[in-house]
Every structure is written in C-alpha cells, then in structure tokens.
Length: 176
Image (cartoon, rainbow, N blue to C red; front, side, top):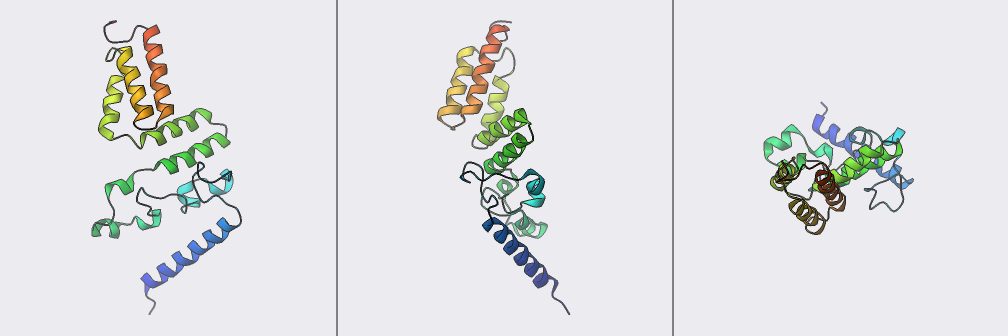
C-alpha cells in the first residue's frame, strides 16, 4: 500500500528541486529590488501563484504550498500569512510594466509601500483624503509621515498631489 503523504512529500521535493535547477539557469528568484537585474518572463512566470510559487512567500517566509487547511487547523498559519507581501506586489508591478500597464504597475508599487503601514492608519488616511475632511497642512503632514515614518515615498507624493488638486478644486476642509 502506498503512503499518500510520503508520495505527496516526494512529489513536492522533486518539484522544488526542479525549481532550483531552473533558478540556477538564470530565472528570477527574488523580488525586483533584490534580484540584481533579473527580469521575469511574463509568458513563463505569470501568474506567479501558479508558475512561480517559489517567489511567492508569506511575511514569515512560508511558501504557498505551506498554506493548507491542515496547517490552518493546527494553528500554524497566522492571519499575516494570508496577506500579500511587498515583494509579491513588486513582482506584480514588474509584470504589469512589461505588458505596458504602467498605471497598474504604479498602483502595485504604492500598495507594496502600504504593506508597512498599519491597517488602522491606512483607514485614517483614507478618511482624511475624502473631500472637505482635511486642510492642506494636514494632508502634507500625512505625506511627510508616509515618507519619513513608513518609507513610502510614492504614497507620500500621491497625497501631496491630492493636496494640490484639492486646493485648486476647493475641496479642502473649510472651503465648503
């Protein structure tokens, strides 16, 4: 009788070793900011969750294969393991850029920066960005916080642009 668990583990090991062999041939093995010039191949690598599971990791470094119902039931999978990481978002940005989707790539890059910002603070910033909710000074303060505290310069520039547009369109607090 074949032990299905052992067979499954053997298959995973073989697949993992195949991935390592392919990586040794020059395929990307890290996020764009860390891969020293390596480029993803859109046709071979996308979608990442299917074709490059070796690149998609949880915040704690687990692979997609590690996220199973059994592991969830054992308590080995934490909520942070189900969130996308900045590295995965940057990989998605690289793919979007390669197929000419520059705006989508920028959105992925800003999203990557926001992975460092606590959820509660993101919601506060979202509320502050609604028309008539903030003064220009408050928005510029948020931009400075994003840039200096969270190292999120793209998001900071986005908020600064919003502050300028809101000022021109008279959408700042007190201009109702």
